[in-house]
Image 1: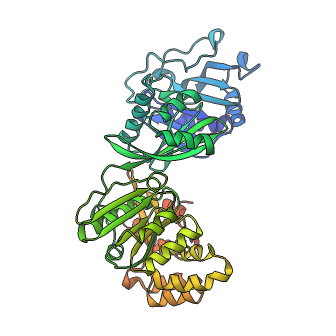
Image 2 (image 1 turned 135 degrees about the horizontal axis):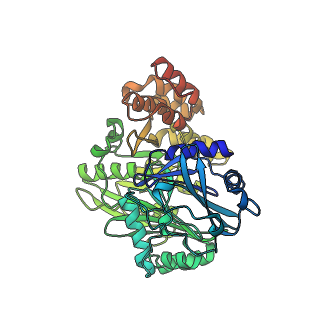
Image 3 (image 1 turned 90 degrees about the vertical axis):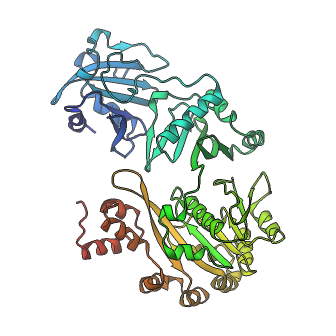
Length: 503
């Protein structure tokens, strides 16, 4: 990344007010403009890349020994106007900011450029009418650890982020519409401070578990939302990721779930799986399906989760929600006990191991409707994943059991929606008699062909769903292509439908 590349980024500041470019070790390039951070380059930059780029624009009298420890500020006359650069060296990591001179105080003379290291970035007092607090100005969190934690959770809810990431020695960050957006205005969270904030909301047993295992999971609720929390240790110290779970369950109608998925909610028995990669919205879809059952049937719903995410109140159904580690020892223990608890519908938060899968299949065979989740990328591969969990001498028996108990697989991915937000692309496999025979005979590789010819009964491939989103102008073609598993086939679909991809 040389000077010409840096000038290309600086070109984005032309004609702007209160905007700045942010370069930080281990992150992409961000443009702070109009109250939000926009990603210019997603690929993480290394410290040598950033140092090399700024070494080419630093004044000649400062080049010796650059970069110095701490903060260094200097002017730069770019092709689009006068700029001010600030460069902070923090050992193996660096952070650099470029601003238009018109948006900041006058650039300091070279003799005063070197500033002693400080615990926080230097504030900029004369920023004009920018709508976002400049990252160089810290917004102090409350002194009380619990209040500080809830301040960040409120920020997460207000900005409609899916996750809050916290790492010792780094500023907190949000995942918004799939992108990581650092909250630099809050400054870095030191290890001891972050630990105090996390333990202020964690149950005592989770603190003990963290001491034993170096990670732990729990749920936390505020007046605004519920959060699924994971606390872990890494090379920086303590860290955490918090997933936002809305306090109200989105209905199937709100989400626009297709009729074939809703029909699965009215089965009397069988296994129904919702799958997809991490962060693909599986829990939200499954919660909407459980809510649909709750509003339309008169049954007993039992959920087994780690931790409990969406909270379901009794509507037409009686709902009991059990949390692994709090109300039961494990998924498999709760599943075994479920057979004595008279459920009609059982939700298993995650089919993690062979024994849990085996009990779930048996439960589905004995007259219960079982919902579960798996981390797989397509509906056909879900069948293979289930079978491959078992030793070879049991796989023939499991194929037979699965062909009789599996009723449907919904696989989904989240795509960035045009104009903001995200929308789900869904693959739907319904286990017809033909699909059941393929499972029983070990010919699962033929399932995609059956799905192509069985669209009339509600089956849908992921590529067909992605194509539909593009044709409805909800998703960019390049975004759909990035989420496809069979990219070559989707490209052919685009060509046949006159949809062009960026070069």
